[in-house]
Image 1: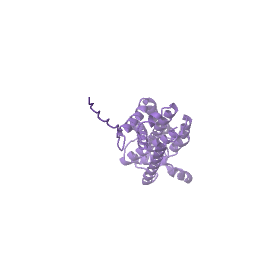
Image 2: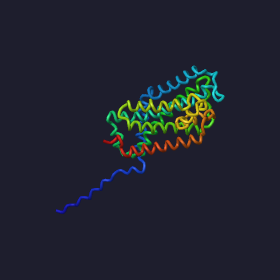
Image 3: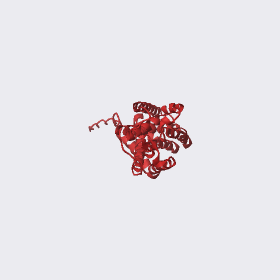
Image 4: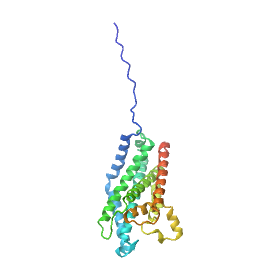
Length: 274
């Protein structure tokens, strides 16, 4: 009795994702945003309240409405710098804590196993940090808008948008590098306390650079946070301590350099893969 031959089994083919794994990238971004949104009182409300307290305390301590800088009330001069400070600190905290917690808890494999390239990992983490930084910046800016003696009027929209995004991208990338490098929370806290916080406070947030001695002005010229805050402030009040074009080029080059660094770290698996 003749038997009918079975058809040959179709070869098993892998799923073609394409040049960019958009679904994986979107999933990583959602995870990063939902992570800080679930504890919004700690990640969003608390930084906003702290920044508002900075405004109240410094305004009262340094003369309130009677003091003027660049022909503006001190509160109007101070507000843009405080907004950028909030953006910087929260963008850094989001990416550094995400990677460090994953490493400490041992679930970093959940990030490395999915078919995500180094570019997609970089973009996903950075977009999560940018989102948190911008959301906190918006909440602080809205609070300042309601405060008496503070005028929040945008003069150059492009400068506000560029320097806000540049600040959040820069510190998100720095946070990724910190989270990968750090082995425990003390290491990340050291970067925050000895690098991020000093650069933020010595960036011209509370003063104009021309009030400093020549040596301190030279040091400020190398501080990227100074250009971020000065450019963002220029977008609101039209006053600048430095050349805005130099600030754009300087911060853009730093962001490109950090992005390449993060990409190479993810690609090599440094301190991530056993």
